[in-house]
Image 1: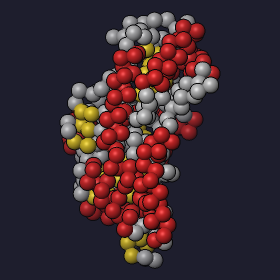
Image 2 (image 1 turned 30 degrees about the horizontal axis):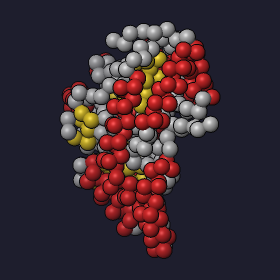
Image 3 (image 1 turned 60 degrees about the horizontal axis):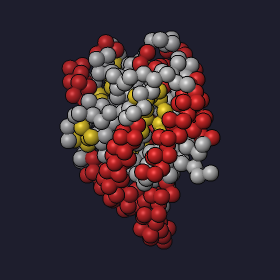
Image 4 (image 1 turned 90 degrees about the vertical axis):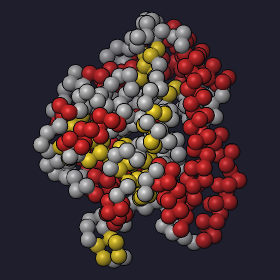
Length: 385
């Protein structure tokens, strides 16, 4: 049985294998495996790509968020507004610095923060907003930036899934005070291991984050703060530098994949399709649909996913339990029903295979398998509106 995985990194590697092999060999021969010119060259190139004067690379997207929060001196007693429908790292880092995450419900049409609900969540303890450009779809940043200016709040963009996305012609990561990126292998710009970056226009902020990632040291063996060890190694930087040159092409291929999915899926009334933003450009890290009639328990979605897996089509669920209902955040006092859109999304979403090299024949197989699975579990049709 031929299996269609959620992402296939081997196909991408085939197109750049010669370049990667040469770059890796050069790094190994140099003996400079931590920091050094290769790392700085990539940091400069990535900052230029995003459109910021400064870029601090680190060892993960999680650390990028953590370092940004630390650099703003956000900690105990502070609140940070963010989404409940995202990977745990977004909120986890807020907790890691001792601050309190405040979850605002999402807009079901975008899976991003409901911009009409942010202001009501602002208190005299709020220090920052962390909008998440989820699944590669940019947040409409105008209202976020307006609120941040009015209430003197920091804006930390979580761009982990959205490298290359744009809002009104400007790249995400250049819109707030800082942008935080992940180079996890499955991201649009993914390494061969963990990696991350923080982009900013603020030189002093960049220097502080660099100090914090180096054990709190600007001068070797002299430490002014309790920092962390969060460096991007030279091998990852060399690989990412090659991939960065292909990123726009790969993002264009992702868009073509989405356009084919939209055409193939249009007749399926049981499925609510994602829509491209009117104010910018999405880069489709995931192609995430909703099963419109999935119950609160999500059983129909589970059965559809299992039937597709048995047929060789592997779909993913991002995310089955929103953050405000996670066991680790019980102490915050959220109850089921408090953030209904996020809870609905958690029960309905299904991410179909998505990678730049996904072909038409594979997509036809995915959609036909989905049709058969829907018919098998008897999901009732519902007109998308």
